[in-house]
Length: 139
Image (tube, rainbow, N blue to C red; front, top):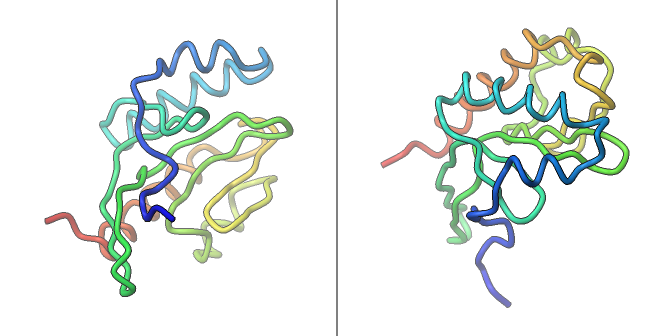
C-alpha cells in the first residue's frame, strides 16, 4: 500500500476541466478561480482529475505519514459545488453567518455560490489558511 496521496497536482488545464462540466457550474467555477486566486495569490492548479486547488502545504502527522495537500480549492460535483476548507468548520461564529450549505470533514457543499455570503467565505478561507499555517508551518 502506497503512502503517497492519491490527490496530486497535475498539468491538466483548469479551463478545459471547467468547460467540460455542466454549464450550470461555469459561472460559479470561474468566479471561484478569481476568488481563491485573490485570497491566496496562487494560480489555479488541477489536483487529480477533478479538484481545482490553490497553494499547497506540507503536512507531517505524529504517525510519520507526510505529504503535500492543496491549501484550498473546489470541485464541481454532480449535486453541488464542493469547496475545500482544509482546517474544517469549528469556527461557529463564521459558520453561523455563511448561508445555506452542508459540510463534511473539510468539504463545504453548496448548490450555487449565491447560497452563501462570499465575504464570510473569504473570512472562513483566511481562517483555514491561518490554521493550516499554524499547525504545519512551512520550513
